[in-house]
Amino acid sequence: MGFIDRMKDIKNILSNRHYYMVVSLDAVLVVAAYLAAYFLRFEGSIPDEHWQHVRDTLPFIVPLKIACFFFFGLYRGMWRYTSLLDLISVIRASIVSSTAIVLIILFTSHFQGFSRSVFLIDFVLTVALIGGVRVAIRMALAEHQPYFPFFKRALDARAKKAVIIGAGDAAEAVLRE
Image (cartoon, rainbow, N blue to C red):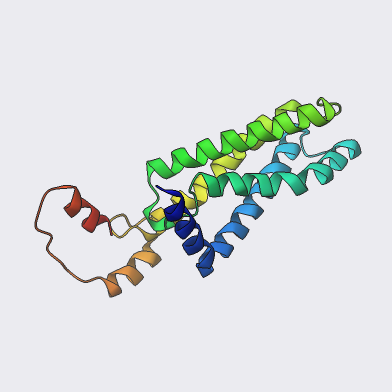
């Protein structure tokens, strides 16, 4: 993809009204994962000095993770078509963002007073929450798999029958759409 095409892609993403809702949800999930990592690490009782670390690091962790998610293309497709490749992108984006966070903290404070395990727990929870929400929405909206029956009835009412002739990649792409 060339630079011009990439800029058009970014413009289309930013002009989509659902983009801001999705980014906001991801930001909430990133905060939830980070706080849950501290709660799990300290078994529900976070010491005051670590609360200060949370307040100091959260303002740069959320934008950094969202930027990595954007860079890895998590905001390009629709969640109803989430695939294994999308989950791999979630994992890659989480690896890069978590590594960047660890390096920033290493160079700025040499991990003085930070619990290293929090960042590993945060990575696992970020992948689970960001990927889990996408998969749950895919499952909820899947027409052929009624995981959530109330969604299936709504989809059945809108369904139209069609015949696809062909057995190649194009026919499969039409079927997925």
